[in-house]
Image 1 (cartoon, rainbow, N blue to C red):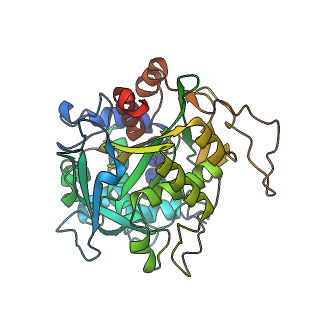
Image 2 (cartoon, rainbow, N blue to C red; image 1 turned 60 degrees about the vertical axis):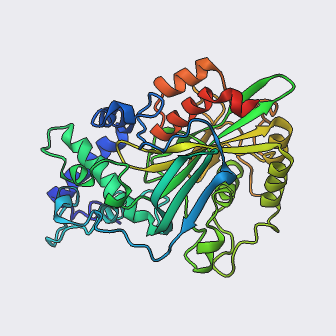
Length: 406
């Protein structure tokens, strides 16, 4: 129970909650506005997403051509943590006169969403996706989910307050340019645009997700591609750190959770996940091996409001493979709703009951998703409340559509 619910909320906490409410309500226009704070040539494909030189390759890079390395002992040299005096303006005072230690601590106590757990992450330290021969490198240390919120979400809160008359942006200024990874903790998410390609009809559709602000602590209320997940081990046990350090394994878990509605419970608290013996992972790997699924990296970008850092990937499924792998496609999951159309007020498909049988009328299965057309892309990129990473990913996929779809 929050102090507000028990009647002991301070004036600082009430003001913090008011500003956070505005942040949650206006995330999309605030991101568009925040992007103007940075050089125009840093914007990706005309969207608010920002990228450093070398982060957007000239053509799609096969995901297996991106080399990743991990140094668990690598420290962040002198970067901002979000707990310094410069961040006091976004860390309210409690009734006992103490200040919240970090922005995530305030969220946990005053505005906790359904999914809000501090787990280990792979902290992005260096990146270059423009190497010759369509290759790339990503280097990581270890961090935690709340580390990123203590700086990034704090900067978003500060920016929302500034648009309502508050003075200064001290935390944002301390971060510097968002792509200067040594200046802040940068947990990386992997955003995957899922394209279902029907070779018979020559058409393609994409899947979209609406993030529920009551369920998630980041980007609630916005549209996004699906699946998306923080690049992190499946659990805190030490054996997961190396076993789960793989881009495709991370994407596989997110496909299971967000499209099939499975729980984030893999038994990895007692032993590492055996991906080769997990039926869904094995089937998905076999589809990739056969060429029925093709996965590419289109770039890396930073959200101008929250500094959330996303690897932009696209997975193109031949229609028969998609329909077989995702026969149990769900309409809602732990983070929000999968959409059947842009103006949808209900899930794309009915959610299965506990016995695995779909409730309600059986949906049309031939063309799940939203048409991947120039008109739809323009609407999503320029006229819908898309998360910056999703808008950039869709715009880049359309730019490279001939390469991706063949």
